[in-house]
Length: 231
Image (cartoon, rainbow, N blue to C red; front, side, top):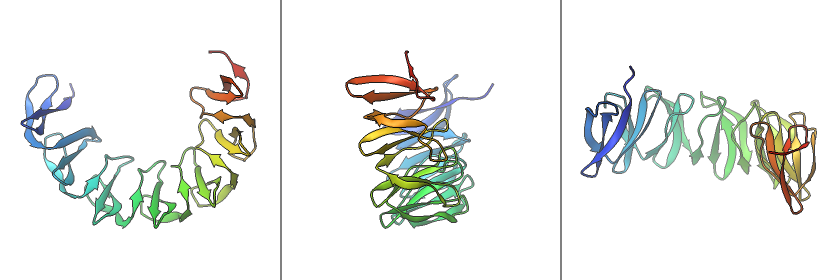
């Protein structure tokens, strides 16, 4: 039976114990212990962050000013006020060059530098130029980006696959992305076709085959074909 660990607090410090038996695995020593992901947990002590394994061993030293949990095999870390990424061995995979970085999604991470956004791959190579005013994380192979007040979509090679013309846009879900133009909202597919007309005052992303929409005084749900449904 796999051992399930949980943190506990004693004297203002956190330790680890076997959730089933209550046996202490690691005596309290950290200010905070986060959840284990792929066998590693982020820990904080004072103003430093690092990672421990399930035996309580400090496998990645507490030397970072800030850090986040692992996602897709990498954790974002901050040193000297700049962000980069480490792998699960603690090796610096992406140098600490950026003002802000976000977790990897579909092998791509959004990064920000001097107020502009773009994307890097797991080797740190810039694949989407850092020129955009804002960007959503990749979803279904595409990312919504904002430039000069308008939104469109790019692919993982940095190609602008859907024209940057919308007043607002969010990520794709189930092949459809919510967009807004001239105060009206609807959905587009990955070719840019407006498959659900922009006739709504507000729309939410699809979840479990349905999306919540608002039209006038009415709020209701539609399916992926744009048909009104009762739930």
